[in-house]
Length: 141
Image (cartoon, rainbow, N blue to C red; front, side):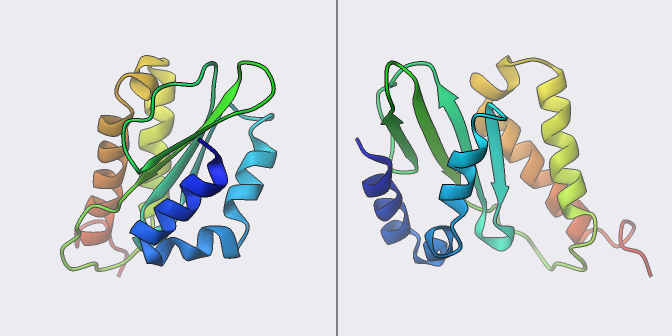
């Protein structure tokens, strides 16, 4: 499977994501992967893209996951996480910090939080961001 065709399928399935190629987000993430084994690209109201070096080519499990084998055995995994529904948003201030803090905590707990429980960890990070955006006690007045 080639990353380009997977990205095209992802955009076809989620037209609001056309900006990931228009803005060069995929290309930038691929250039940064040698410096960081995992990259999270927050897309605001459009969700999150996750990039990771994959030591082997895993079987593809759904259209929101793109995999490509590069030279040798190393591959690249790109996974899209759709946004969680949010009730009335009061402010986006601090939402990125809440998301990042949850992800950093997961990384600090070890690889299992990001490898075996990535979907649960991403859900928790998105939920933390939503809590900040929708809770009147967290919004500065």
